Image: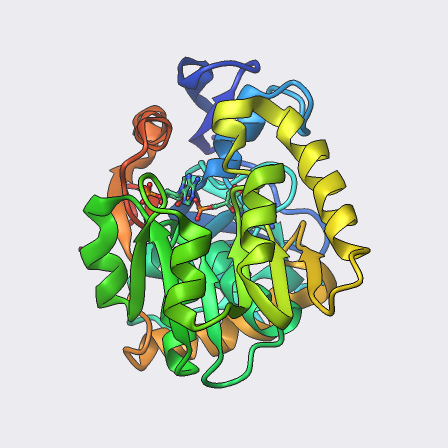
Length: 338
Ligand SMILES: NC(=O)c1ccc[n+]([C@@H]2O[C@H](COP(=O)([O-])OP(=O)(O)OC[C@H]3O[C@@H](n4cnc5c(N)ncnc54)[C@H](OP(=O)(O)O)[C@@H]3O)[C@@H](O)[C@H]2O)c1
């Protein structure tokens, strides 16, 4: 008898109500693929964007979710170095992680130590990877430098602070007041972006500007603010468009144009954009290092809530409502964590 499983499918573009729990035959791994029995799948602001915008790929019906942790359940032809039952983490393109089973290219599956909590591990796959990339590859951060992290209590923002602390950075983080205690506990000086003059406050606290600023909000005013917070030689890294929540996807071309403008200013500052954290096999290179830091207790991913896989709609509602810290994680019946 053909085995079956469930996955969440966005049946059309729209609100969270378009997410449907669907029963289907198990996917079969193709050449050089493995099938994973999903334990934990990440939920991100990006998932909300592709679910609600006609302008962005993929086209419905599709399963959202870019990051997943699961055990290898079946191997396609020509797969070496992985075995059945082994826990692995993967960053996904194409059909996503909100599923009981998913097939992934074997080369994208990174082995995970068995003792780690899959819900914590899944936070590393997209969020900490992005944080590592913007800090080290894009901003080329040096030990002891000063940084500004916009949205410091968010999934990626809190990851930047935890990795930044390991480099002994002097950190300033924007957040709503109810997240200030958290931002402080992560080693940064909190700034209330809702009531304070962020630029004036950063310049005052840092004594003339920061060496690097990380911005996932986007838009002209926001990017200009992050850029102006830099001292000479400073680097701005823009990696997201959280402002699309208020301004729609037109914020994307506007942000790209702003970055192009900032790039050509002759003022010895740099402006870089990151569109995908995984280009050039970055995940394969860096995830093992991040897993090592997690196993050593040097990283503590902040999980907003572990939500059952079939309640993905609720996770989207929570993100849309806002006010949370860290990352929402979907967990399957096979998840044995906390
Ligand atoms: N380029 C890439 O490869 C890549 C990879 C991963 C993520 N991303 C993008 O990065 C973005 C962030 O992802 P995430 O998962 O970290 O998001 P998130 O967890 O939803 O965080 C959003 C945070 O932004 C804060 N915020 C909202 N408006 C703000 C403003 N005007 N100024 C300062 N902070 C503000 C909120 O803080 P308060 O709640 O404290 O108000 C919230 O904590 C998303 O747009 C995602 O698509 C890009």
